[in-house]
Length: 567
Image 1 (cartoon, rainbow, N blue to C red):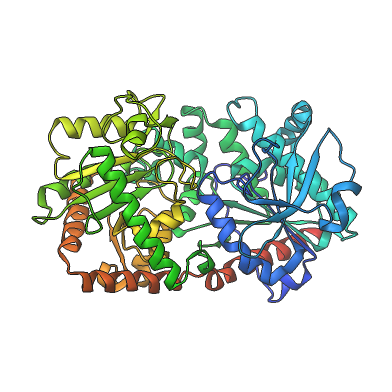
Image 2 (tube, rainbow, N blue to C red):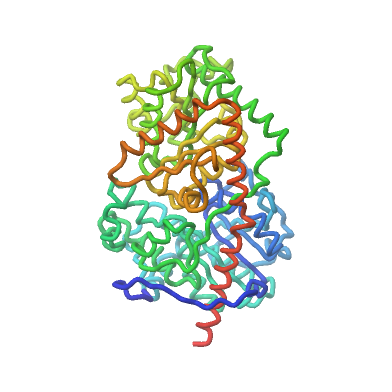
């Protein structure tokens, strides 16, 4: 490693304004370019419009070509003439192939999809160099480590080839890599394009996520954790050492929130030079007429699904619809606290009010519930599905959400609020809702995201962007941003921020349920005001306000690159 492991690295770099004008090509590489997996897709796809306005076609996104003719990417529009016909003119080693086109999102930025070909066969040699130069321990790798390294190294090779093809000096290039999954690409670029400025962004440290995912108390013992020690304990040596090496080697290291910046300092032993908070692209939100139409149609669909799954007719457009969504990380994403809060809401729900709580979290889905399909009037069969599942799972007996719902039902704690678990991607083709997530979001009355580990928190941010008040917590970067900049109540800003610690679980559940039931008692006028406050908060998180932080990161990268070139 290039840094003493016993010391935390802090870099002070004087930044001269206007350095971004020196950039002829800005590459950003991520596993989630044109590949919708999680929150990083939301970050990249929503910031692209503003970034494209600034850099025009000097901006190039690079993502994995994991698609086929039978399963094409719905977000990629192929154009062979992109980048001066690089597709047909660039020669690449190791069987690497590319496809060029545009990302079908606001801004329509240029994109290159990379198939690593036989790169994996050459990884042992790459691993050896990375151990020698940066101390990256690939010996203990497993799972998705090899696939991620093959893609990111291939991406780095493509960056060098495109730069040469475009006749751009390497000193006029910025190569930005996102998350540990592209860290090997950044290190490869450092070795093979030393005059290029590099940026590395961690959206969540791999070891921090692992500590939390393994049920350990991150916050009460935060200052006592050592990242290298925990990586050895949790069998995370390879991912952690790669991420740590990339963070130290990058010309500029960034993360998305002050919450995660502190985590990086403690576990990676380097504080990010720049914090780049996540914004939102307002063009994703429909205008008033379409919005109102989506809200009406979405509420009708939610009520229809609720009636079909309960085989009743008790739910209508006046039902109070609550939801949570995101990655299937039971503890980290607060799915445990969401369910316990819903149970507590049921104890205090206003009389004569019907409420349904939806869990829109993809899991190991098998197929749509045959019984539910029948009740919705589609072709189906009686498969005796649990009366809370929209889709059958391969692991219903062990899925943590199912297990907790079953336990709460046995205790009679879900009699007042109906819980419906939709363990599928809401892409508009799920066979039950058949409405994409963003189009269904306006139909909700309230969302709850009590994450235990959440570097930023795109789901609560998306919620307020679509005018849906939300309850989140101070362990989410977005929640902390709201607490720092607003009076966090539903009436004032559409957001409630609950404190979460390692020892206040029941207290947090009580606060969530009390805020939720108080909002449920509000009259329609007050709820409309809260929706308006949500829109106003989201407007202040527009990417146009937050892009200055990326400009600063690019300037730091160029300044530090210039400094080391003089050494």
